[in-house]
Amino acid sequence: MLDSIQSFLDAASGIVWGPFLLIPLLLGTGLYLTIRLGGIQFLRLGAALSLGIFRRRDRGAEGDISQFQALTTALAATVGTGNIVGVATAIAVGGPGALFWMWVTGLLGMASKYTEAYLGVRFRRRDAAGERNGGPQQYLERGIPNGFGKLLGVLFTVFTVFACFGIGNMTQGNSVSANLENSFHVPTWVTGVALTAVALVVLVGGIKAIGRVTAGLVPVMIIFYVAAALYILIVNVGDLPAALGLIFAEAFTGGAAVGGFAGSAIIIVIQMGVARGIFSNESGMGSAAIAAAAAKTSHPVRQGLVSMTQTFIDTIIVVSMTGLVIITTGAFSEVGDDGEQIPAELMTGAAFSHGLPGQWGHWLVTIGLVLFAFSTILGWSYYGERSIEKLLGRRAVIPFRIVFSLVVYVGCTVELNLVWSFSDVMNGLMALPNLIGLLILSGLVARETRAYLVHDPKLTATQTEIERFMDGEPGWAEWRASEQEIDRR
Image 1 (cartoon, rainbow, N blue to C red):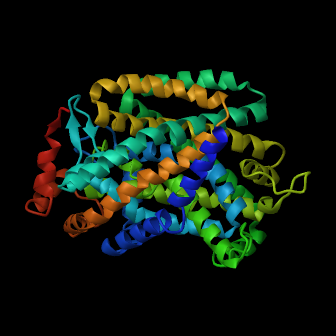
Image 2 (cartoon, rainbow, N blue to C red):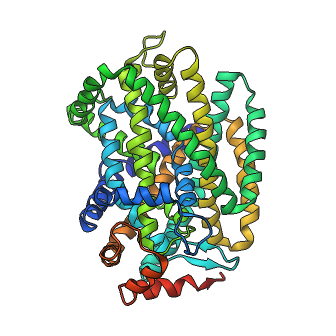
Image 3 (cartoon, one colour):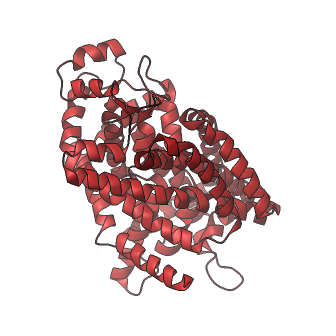
């Protein structure tokens, strides 16, 4: 029975993530939005990083959490096992060239992330508890004024509920418990109890508690991980040119990919790069728009740009560090005692162990994976919460938080081969309705983005100045009116 289910999920994943559905849709949507928005991810990255990371808040703006907390909540959900195990898996199957396609997915995905975050704020509403509620489950239904938009919104919401228990919960807990058991001999049930208890304490506090925890945790864990990777790359700086040459050469030849012939090898390297790229940064999936909608911001453009930096940090910085360490240390071609390539789940640990003295590399990857995975659980809990609220109403929120926390224990203590496959399928199905919606709503986003950036290209305007120069501009009156509207469903 289980073998039949596994075969079905593998077949479904092959279709969803195959070369004729999600991969061209993801890359095509990112490229199309990049063109329509005038390369916004390249021209406005500096201003976006300044606002989101250094200034951190939009003074006088309305919302539930600061822009920095919204950014770290989204980063918490994305900087997880995908940045450690996911990168290794892409390189193990697709070869070093897969890292190139992860970069392409990230760069084009920044335009998708901007668009979905913009729409998340643009169509958000205050719920009966006074909190901001937005994301694809809102903007697909409200932005596309017909039954098709409502259908897309419902599909996204249902797929998100399923996905949050898989990729955002059980798989993360399983990675934590397995690594702690292998590294420090901690029984899986002990990890399960501890992780469940901590998650429950944080999640009961809602988005404000999640925002406070991620704002403190995420920057520290990323800085330490990147610093360790940079040390290894500096030590192995002589190997960097060859590593970069290998990445670019095999991106278009598939030389090290697992494939029966040249054409299939190239397809595999692209497929692994794109699939693991979106697994890591979630651009196009719509999930980060849910966190963006809670931010205190003076205009959707501002939060869209801040949210866009999440993909840059996740893929261009953290994923690059992992991939380059794996390639420069030679861990991607290392074989075990059986003469076979070492498993992907051990590859990053082996790379850092080669690059750092003593046991530091092994410990660093284990601790990093624990922190990354736990932060992912927190971020995805909020995505699932908002989706379950959309389906069942506000009364379902507290029961969901409790159930979500308890499921963490399940993930820590059982084998999850089926769950990993199921999560891959759900991630892809989440992205489909969202990407269709982004294409349909791209004209609105491009028009209103241009109207704002003409007046405030460096994102330095005050609330009073924004109120003055946006008066009469496209979309401004509708957004301001919606900010005061309460959704009592």
